[in-house]
Image (cartoon, rainbow, N blue to C red; front, side, top):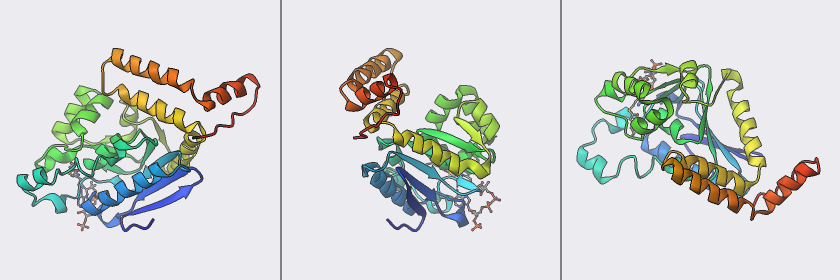
Length: 258
Ligand code: HXC
């Protein structure tokens, strides 16, 4: 695969995607988003890949939508081209887990992209914000919805209404990120975490991701019912037999991963 605005590489069973538009703080223009969607689906379709890491640069994961590209768009334009819906949400359509490894700025659409991933690992340099209000618009890629679910109404409302950025410590304290790591160790940590996930049974990882995501989309009773069905289904897998046999026999499991 060869792209202009992202870099892709494979590290064992992990697909690594690096946003690479340094002159514009990885601002998310149409081309970048198109390339990102292609790369995400290519990794998702590759049976050798069990987890994806999405990262940016030291300075910026992504500083949001490309303001210069979208500033002149009319209502007619954004409505007719289904701006956002059509390309921006590809990362939410994958069965393969995606870890966002965030250093520096994750602003506007950049924060929204990170939140669309399955979880966020933050460098101690990370800064998150929804500054759209400062440029005359509102978050449009799920920011008002996902941020509120992550950090609660009060902090989300303050961030959305004032554009205030939060640092990694505040982001971790409020549940936006799973962990903070020193910036120099971010990528290695993210890759190590991804390798761990990729070594588990592939279908069981898909089930775990699907069930956890249900928590955001339905009632508790429905979510628990959904989880129970997938939990039962996992007993139909060879990998469940192998995993539990390995525990009983005090050895490492050898998952078939298919
Ligand atoms: C286009 C951007 C950009 C953006 C930075 N750049 N962010 N270009 N769109 N979102 C460009 C700058 O114009 C500049 O280019 C270069 O990147 C370096 O940026 P500087 O501002 O000089 O760097 P710095 O002073 O370090 O400040 C970094 C920053 C700031 C705090 C990240 O750039 C900033 O506030 N950016 C905008 C953040 C924002 O408002 N994001 C929300 C966008 S709206 P030149 O050519 O001048 O050197 C959005 C809506 C999403 O995301 C809805 C879904 C589509």
